[in-house]
Length: 584
Image 1: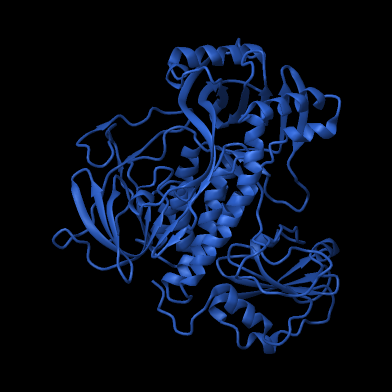
Image 2: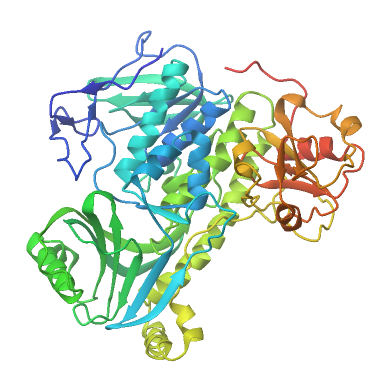
């Protein structure tokens, strides 16, 4: 049964499942107005929902909704269980990377992100009162998207929700989002998972072939399976506060180390839409978290900070406050039988370098096409093991960079503290040392050791197997305009000679593959044309062929594919089986 997203007009926000009532809907923030959605219960047979869903997603935050939209792109229906009745309260994750924007474009929600979000690509760091570093994230004429966009998480969730509503309008019941409903029990059987769903008026049982745990840092699914995150946790604590402030300061990332108004600690500041500003400030060891979160203490600090940066004369008001402790932790595997984990349910990231939300969006992108193929019977379940392998490898790259930043932002020992003091004091005079202050912002991560990749040719340039295919500006539009929820065979033909593929493609699984031919500007034929710079960047001055996965990563590449190479590479990348179920 399809259960739609139904707004409720009364200003009541139901409490978590098990509570009888609820508190008020969060107050408006700038131009954003919260909507409370009522719980809709499916038709039941003696407390049991008939049938079995292909996929149930626990958690309707950004990662859960992105996964549902990704599955929808592949024609797979899903049920999303979200414990709350609204999108999240507070700005929370605010920085959306270029890689995440590329994924969001494939999900169909990009226009709203770009219309509301604030693009930026630069940042400044200060030691006491002196600027010691100005960094810029990579950006060139090939790109159609900015390196980073600032957008509050409630907008992120709302725009993904809006896209879910649009998808359901076109295909009713494609994504069954059930508000005010969470999991209270789960049990795996030989063919899937039996779940107990709980809402304010009762509970019911439903069954799923696969359960995707996207239920956050306090994941119920993770605890139910007796799993725990492992890794490094640091003692550094940060108060996070959103304030409404009519400042005209530019959209950039600013960091102050050992400022006079927070000696021995760090302060970060980001601009967000609707005149909302994020301030993160580190607590010193002697400060009590409870005392620091008192409204009067927060207000006093914010006023000192604004006075110090020359904006203390502007009126401001607090909007949302929280506290954060740095850490980099992960599960040792993201697949456990018929349960897969994504986002904060799978791992925890420090805020430095904005890898939390962006890693979760990348999880959803990697998982969606694989779970779609497996749930439809087109691929072996081993394909989901590759999800775990690839995303844990990505976690380790992210964690290494993030923890380097964390050790600099929140030194874990006196030794690290002395190193930071030395680097900062010398950074003004020695720009090479200033690079130690660089926050190492998130970027696309390749899967160099992916079991899905095939060996190919040593092209003179271009992405390797496992890497993300970099964006390219074509004569009209961009390369990513032509990619979709399928494998793409990118044929680069710089001259009139054709790359001999017809015989090779005869044995390829046609429903999984699309062919995209790029010719040089002025040459006949092809699906799109590109300048010589694109062919040079991709090592294709004499022609080349790339097999691209649905998530944009390279599965294989050749100068000229040997007979049967494309079919073998596709079979390996998709873990295909001979017989498939009809799509649902």
